[in-house]
Image 1 (cartoon, rainbow, N blue to C red):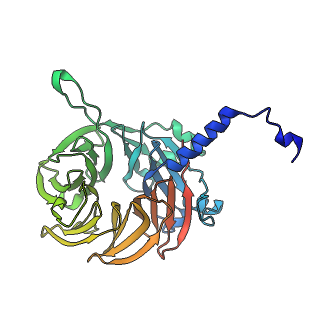
Image 2: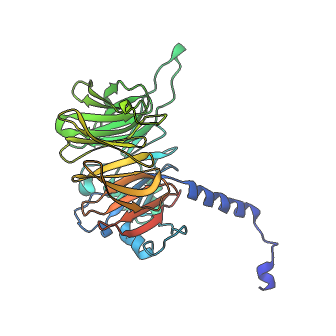
Image 3: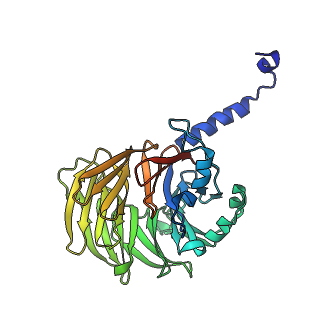
Length: 371
């Protein structure tokens, strides 16, 4: 080693400390939601995916660019950091969910977060970004904030966070699962609240829209899922998952829910329990215990995909039997989404996104870029 390489006179202690902090922050970052962008292209490798992260960022990534970077060839702990197609400072605090409102390029990209806001950007403008830094200059066309509640002597409560959102594109409504135990229905065109759904005794984790029946379903920390009539705002059914006497969970929260394509079957994640409900007959058809807490669930035709506080993607049949388990890169998985081709995207702790083919092989794995 030459003398010049050993010369420490130009050592920048502050820069070194900053680099260590940045690395630690990157490794501890969490991607709470990943969704595939709407497209008419049946090839998932040409699609974009959008992420919502704990640093408040909303980012889009090209799967084909990640494959070209070599993200599919690197396994282990040294995951490559992918360059986003667009990177937006979406929220002050963690961003918990992203959804699309509308179809194709004319849709709105919606996000919600810990700051109590729902923000929306024109997807067409995001696609037009030439470099990622332009995302910071994109102004949202929709900026909604949850109301504050008046307490004693006129004091205002903190703005409740939004933990999840659901969309009724035809009705022009956005439903938010908030931290004040309420769900809110927002009018997209008027940017105002149309209805408030009150009845839960603790904050809400999740919400799905049952548009065929003009209903929404919410899941809460209070251990129940509730079905609401969107015309009257009244609760028409309470699904009490806390009645499972075999469960030893200290907090029987409903962490995630999902509807199938017919909107007749409801899957509920409740601690280390996954249950399937037939909504027309109001009956629990199956319930299965899992090795770790479930954090997200979706339907794939007549099968259920579930992820949680373990590095695995589990596929169940409608009876609750395990069909397959695939190891995932994130040690704790918060999101699972499905492309029409059968390709699956999971994301979670460490800022990691894992793209899995319909055959169970890993197409690419990358670490999202932080702000």
